[in-house]
Length: 318
Length: 302
Image (cartoon, rainbow over all chains, first blue to last red; front, side, top):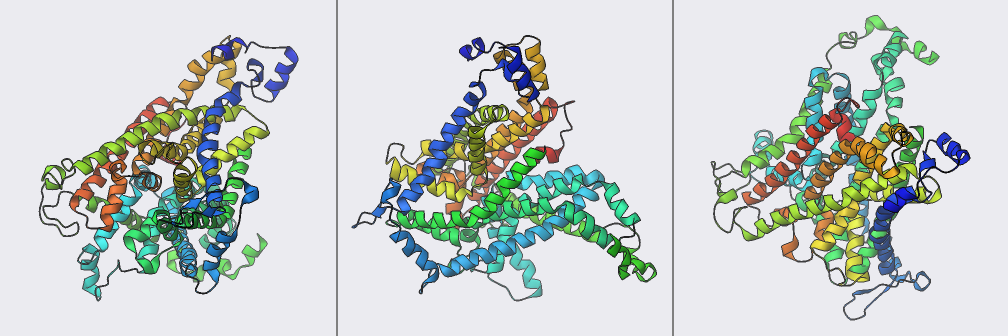
């Protein structure tokens, strides 16, 4: 740091004006001054984010030790072989396609859960942004609270309630035959996913709906639109970026989720995340775990790319 | 908008049902959904906390109040069972060290990336954002394979690798929080300081860092709370049972035969995270007083 200060004297009027025009105060700092700040974080990510993912590729496209089937990763891309990766892929579509059902289930559950998140989340965010009045701060606090309550605790809490003889059974029993909710019912797992991830939907929606000016809606009403039309033609288009962002934010972790199903479902409701999780801990399945992780990565790369592009655009507008 | 005016629904004001006539009527439907949602989202957690004081073994049938799952029998209660106690220490150890690594690295990165422009800067920023959005599952499995395959036993699974993994995942949170603050304060204060003769190091220490302190504080709170709650990464990197934190114990117990001691463990995590976040929020409001409106939503959205 001392050397940085010593060499950072102002240098030459011309460059200074240029850099100041760019709003960087660059005249005071040598070229390498700001990059140095990012260096530790960047190195950290190269070693512990990029390198691990490269290991996954090397394991998935490498070979296995023949006796115990422990992976022998191959680190040179030109020696990579895709045979075992193909075998894994074939389990998704070549009969007996043992991975096909979990994959379809993953998409179906994620789709259903995201849709419910959107509908319920929109209503809650809309009410909070527009009508909450003096209750806004307490409601917001309650909306934020789930972020800081362990996901596992929240699902565990539901597991206790849904047990045979639990409180849900007591209430349900008044109206209908008792149901074993934890015996691998899709509805339990989907609602579990909704419960787990809906806070991530509500907050961006709230942020966006809160920014819509009251006068815009009044203008719509004054110009003769019904409340429904005002909503469809004004509010909905203005909140569209937040809707898409919210859908991406809730669906990304859902694709990799396995613990919701582990606690609330059974083998009949297992998802892609469950396949990966089982492979990770099974001896001799290391390569399978790597291949399935690549499949998961391929699934989420499109929503992830969309989200990154939108974030960049938002940053450029700011 | 011409088609709106032509729409028959709009013209038929007299025939509209009473419900839709008054635009300022109370939105009862929305109110019900919101109240229902809030109850649905919080009551299970409250019940789980209450059951940590259950006198019986059940976590779903109330059998009277007792502290036995907190301080009671030596091998069942949270504070006396050696493995649960170890897990509690492990949770706090991991979270504190993760904060100490992730927040300084993230803050420095955010400061640098805000001022440094050009292609390599964009690349570094892209990598950071990617680590922010990537599903935890992918990062967890990747780190697991790296520590077990690539650097076989150089860093064995356990506390060290858990901290490395957590810090990698949490760094981006503090980058995002501090970066947002950097954008909102702009370069003017620092330029003024430099104009008045401060050296770069001085302007950093005496102008920029104090201005960033609310954001740094917020990221300490968020990173700590998130590390306490983290489960996917710490589980894959935990190796043996004695490096498992509370979250992993809850997962394992929930799949076998949980007792209310698990509820007590979850309650400890809950109290720890909520306390840290509330203290962080109150300090954040104090630090940023008069600088910008610091409402709950703003704090939550960072």
